[in-house]
Image (cartoon, rainbow, N blue to C red):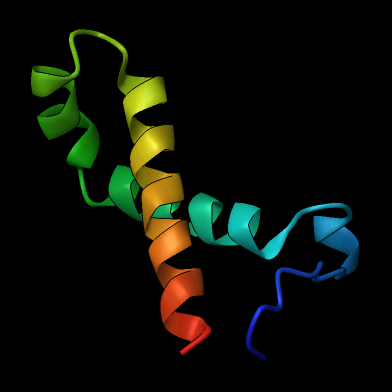
Length: 68
């Protein structure tokens, strides 16, 4: 599926890209792992922005790996 940045369309994900799906899964994992506490220490109070940034970095890496 090289280059496939298409949409996955189960009813609960209408309009969400694969990148968004991977980022959401990454955020969920970080929150359930307690990463928010560790991130709060280094993020100068912008926990949501920091989590989102890391989540999309992870999502991009997952897509890059998937395309190999």
